[in-house]
Length: 315
Image (cartoon, rainbow, N blue to C red; front, side):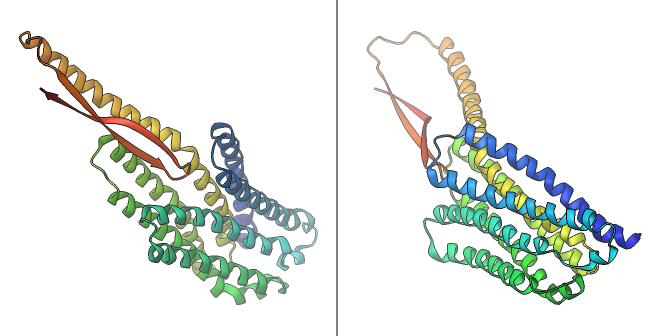
């Protein structure tokens, strides 16, 4: 009984959590297409491709769970055999990760002033992860049982290691480049702080699950705990992309609220000062220069201008 709990019990839990995260994905996809109808076509295509890959992956893990836990319920010996859908799902997990990480790598490319060496360094780990996944699937399909699959433990560990390394590398680069992009203006710096925190949280979440899968396969090689973690990695990639795209309006609104709060505080101080002063002669003119700060949203390539600094020159 303990063997079943640590193998197909963990397997079942992984399928259930993966299905729950897929439900969150569906809600986020609906929200994206409703809230951002004017996004560029390539961003909409990316969202559709990631969602399609994620959907196929969920269908594959559900199929494998049905075979093991329903069809083979009267044939316990069949639980030791490999089901093709359990192996092919690795490929679609890799496709989802590749699409999302390429999108984030493009952000690194833009924030680094189109630096080819930095982008190439990030993309090398992303491509290595995808190539290892393809090799794993190609070598696993001819195998017949879970005992045979133990031959590929090294490749499986390498996939999880490169996945974690890629996520940490991308999150680190984005945070570092965003830190360098500070302008000194309150509104833009507030937005950068929120983007840094968001990049760190979304990037490290997938990395944590990849590390958990790596540790699980190393400590409990005969259990399926690592499979449960790996099932959720693709879903987390999809949700991290959608959360990044859907949070743009919220981040922008929060930064605007902070800027409005600062402006109102300044207005109150100016009013108090004006009431305490004596009347000034009529021949004094006031010149107001407004400097506009441009904030670029890489995902939508839109620009928003805000008057963040006003100087008053008495002539």
